[in-house]
Each structure stands twice: as structure tokens, then as C-alpha cells.
Image (cartoon, rainbow, N blue to C red):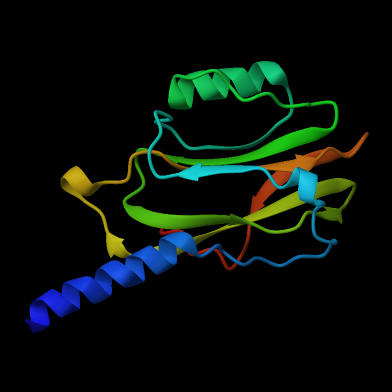
Length: 157
């Protein structure tokens, strides 16, 4: 009986970590409601790591075809960009991927992201296969936007 309770507790903890976002340092005000559009999951066809700010419809469409074999959702790239973090199929650990608020540094708009380990180590048939998180951010005119992993991120190296 205790063994079943132990498994149930592990399941609840796993569910809690999957649903909780990663908290990263923020230096700008929170985004407006119309900007809060995200896509995230643990399965995609994106086999290699892809960590980039997507700024064009062409690249957006190619990413969706490659990762999901679907047409990309409509996006106004005159006003917005999409921060994309795909961990690929080689991740040996399950992570919660989260974004912080963008901040300016040396004429760059930095979008911080972090990874939080989820307790369960994956192997064999349970290996992670394409974890991802994408989030829309407002485009800043004449400013280069980059993604940067935070120092507090818990990625296994």
C-alpha cells in the first residue's frame, strides 16, 4: 500500500513541476495581455536544439513544418517576434522551460529563459522527444533581440 502511495506522490510532484513556470529575473514591466501567446509541450519533431528569436514569417513557417508537420499559426512579424526554445531529442532530462521579461543590455533586447529540472530522469522509451516552449514578444524597432539562458537555469551539462 505504501508503495502505491509513493508512486502517487511522485506523480503529483511531477505534475506540479510540469505545470509550474520557471521564474527568471525581470527588469521591464510585464507584457500587455495581447502579447501573451505561448506554445509549449514535450513532443515535437525538432530533433536538434533550436534556441532563437524568430522574426520572419518564412522562418516561422519552416519551424512549424519541421517541428509539427503543420502550417504555422498566423503571426504579425511587423509587430511581434517569437522566442523559441526547442531542446531537441537528445535531452536526457525533462525540463520546465520558462521565459523572463526582456531587458536592454548594450543595445540588445535580451529575452531571458531558464530550465528547471523535473525530478524524473528519462531513459529508453521514456526519453524526452522534443521539449519546447515558444512565446510571443513585442518587436522593438531597430533593436536586435536575443535569447539568453539565465545563470540560475538548471540544465544538465
